Image (cartoon, rainbow, N blue to C red):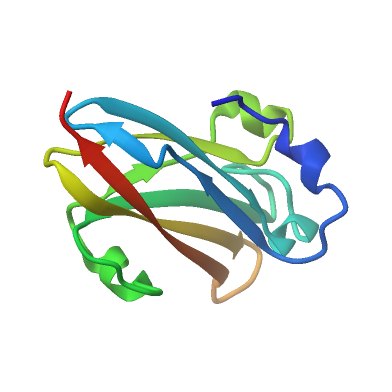
Length: 148
């Protein structure tokens, strides 16, 4: 899977955007790499991630495997303990490359769904009480798991 320079692709976007890249078919118990491209209008507030003087921005991508398709499973995915969390790489942040890399392993053969939840938060540190804006994007992708 070729890693894109997402900032060049989405520079003109005015709406929120998230796209999941992961293989459609994987081998059981093998580690598979994927990535998510994103753009959120919070970029107009601050592009600094995980640092800031008056604002702080946190971006997290959660993944979970599911045997059945569920639409817009945000609440359930947030409550679930068995999920993985991924964050942008420092090099991607420094280059304004809007991408998060992740890895997933599927333990059983058959059709599964990879659920992804992107959470973008902006904390306004100078506001009292603390003010937080949060935006969620949810995606579910069918993945076929085969024997070696």
